[in-house]
Image (cartoon, rainbow, N blue to C red; front, side, top):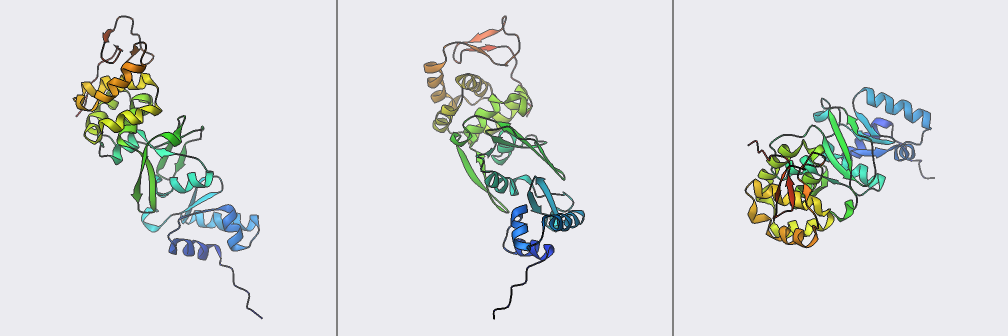
Length: 267
């Protein structure tokens, strides 16, 4: 008669996961592994949470918090967002100021880790970690690259796609001057041909604004292919700063832009 395999207790379960380099688990996985009731699991996980060994940034999704991150109260966002998005079956990518920082444009550390998704999701507050979800259509079509983290890899928008998003989501990136400052730093990482390819995923008005700003921050060598695209597709001028008055603004013919704001770079 074969001996019955002894099921681990909750603490042993965490140790086994961590030993196999896994730092996340779901409620259903824990129930199956421990063979206990839902109320008993709730008690066990509550005890571990009070000990700061685990934390739950989303319903039914738990993180093991190793000692080096106990003061933070969570894993860093890039170490668990890929697992969370995989469990939710959602396409995603880290973008805007977060992506710019990965690409070396770290003028100002973003207050929140910024993630693009296709449907609205609530912000995550997990210990000292803050995550903002931003809705963008066609997330799966945006050019990304997978960058390594201590717990795997994370999808991050390419420098070219990041530049486009920065101009398209100015409000989420600190406004036009902040965007211009980041673009000035990001420009050396931008490939002109790849920029034109990434532009296929964006409205033409974003491209008009981006081309103008890149020219203003000294990156005209990056915009020639983009300018051809704008000339083909832009049928009317748009204001550089959306929502601001532009009836008396001067007009830039190259990019078909009403220049209703000054581009100021803070470097």
